[in-house]
Length: 160
Image (cartoon, rainbow, N blue to C red):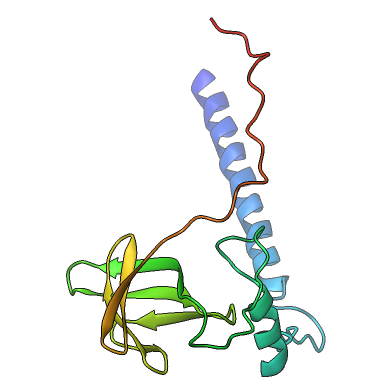
């Protein structure tokens, strides 16, 4: 008798699972695969080239708090500033982010012209060498001016 009860119980459980699977299959067939109606993805807004250049001339991705002030002396008059390097030690190549007197940053590879008469000659992990009309100069990575930043007051700190 106990065997018959357990068999009926197992049969009822299998029947419930079968009904649940039939409901799931029906919902899978009935549910639409994509959006309904005349749906179109939004297109990205593309600024004109002049507007993009104006934005990037004012923006320094490495030192956002330091204002960029262009030099009125032109391309050759101002010093070369190094903002970032990427060195590939396996191939001996790399890239550097340099800015001249006008403040516009450029991503340059090895042996590319920084400006007329200035060529990127070598790239190291903390500096680059430029060839300025036959003269080699080293330009090191510099940090922004932090003279206006006050160190935190540690006098009230408890020591263990």
